[in-house]
Amino acid sequence: MVLNNGPLKGINPYIMFISLLITVALIGYALIFPSESAALVDLVRTLITLAANSWYVLLAALFLIFCIWIACSRYGNIRLGKDDEKPEFGYFAWFAMVYAAGQGIGIIFWSIAEPMFHFSSGSPFSEQTGNAEAAASAMAISFFHWGLNAWAIYSVVGLSLAFVCYRLNKPLSIRYTLYPLFGNKVTGRWGVLIDVIAVFATLFGIATSLGMGAQQINAGLSEIWGIPQSPGVQLALIVVITLCALISVLTGLKKGVKYLSIGNMWLTVLLLLFFFAFGPTLYIVKTFFSGSFDYIAQLVSFNFYIEPAPHALGDAQASWKGMWQGWWTVFYWGWWMSWAPFVGVFVARVSRGRTIREFIWGVVGVSSLLSFVWLAAYGGTALYLDLFEGAGIAAVVSNDVAKALYATFQGMELGSLSTLAMIVGTLMVATYFITSSDSGTLVLTTIMSEGEEHPLNRHRVIWGVMQGVVAAVLLFVGGEAALSSLQTASIAAALPFSLIMLLMCASLYKGVRAEYKKIGDARLYGAAVVNSKEV
Image 1 (cartoon, rainbow, N blue to C red):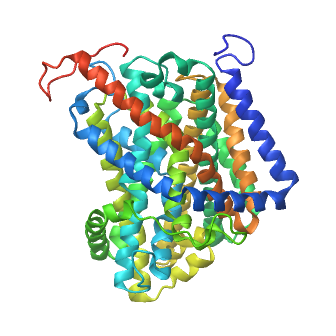
Image 2 (cartoon, rainbow, N blue to C red):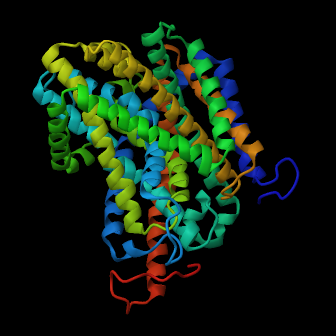
């Protein structure tokens, strides 16, 4: 029920007020009882990691299998729009917006830190540390966490939305992804519940990234200009970036969001060229190809490895901290699932006119390839410097994850050029920060308006500010363990939404099957697909 007048015009009041009340209650509790909140964060992560570890792992594998199957099936030619409809954006702008929304701050934060952690500490897939074998294993695992599975998680939501919106003419709202499965039941209270869960997953997933972004920008400012790393500086950064994001989102998708995304892509290309030109070029190229081969060779074992829990769930001493998979795979899959409503809505919004096959190959295939190039350039350079030049980057990362990028620039020993690279890197983190925030604001208000593609500005302002507040509170509650607090928020928010995603797969299958049947069994596979109305 979207109101047509008054201060809440253009919004569903049930979705907005339920989401707002629960969010304010959580924020209030965290601020009033910070120590209790910190203990609760640790308990929630322990329960989820020990009880739902296999759920996250197997579900992510299922989503990848589902995406590959539907892309290769006869349903792959169905267009997300009218049969003769052309895509709204060209390939470069499309890839730029998809990639900026889907990876953003996260890959800048972890592209060096993650390989260095696996390199120095080992993993269940390799006990080697500090040598060439450890480096190879570290890159393959990093490719796994940033590759096909991550983008398949996003694609399940994005494709489901694009299909029901542009093929079945339904609003661009999370609830309607289940329309082929449940019909008009999604318009009632169940629809409100679905959208509220999506709002929370989006809000806390983005807040996780914003908190990490603030930490990394602060680390960059500290390295370049000596500004101290402190919660106060990070809070100020969140305020400034949130204001910039609000300005961007108020200009709309085709202006601020689009051009910032394209700007992000050019900065990304610029720094990639920097690493290829001034870093260990041959080692980077070798790392890309060998890492890709190792990743593909171990894809099945990666996807179906489930680490035994070190403690029983009822054990008073049980903790997620003893599990490698709790630190890494479970966090990543939960983070991607919490981001899935945000990325899904955004990717669907910019993918009108693509076919299902084109959508999946672009979103899952091309985006994964870009991530591999990024990881090979950033992570490969850091590994080379530690392996062959004793740069000590792994030691820096173990003390402060946010300094990984800047420690690598310093380890390259290029003088003023390294300083310039730090400045460009910090600027890139800031622009990705803004893009994630403004895109997230647009998506949150789109969900609360039941699919309105141009939500009113006043609603964008409210939820843009709310994102910044949640990120700030998570940093405050976490204290010295702020990173763990941020990670737990995304994992917890993802758990209920993961159930909805499973239903999305069933709903999408039912929808495309019915759509294809309408086209007519006489049509040969591969022929042009005619547009139909509703299922």
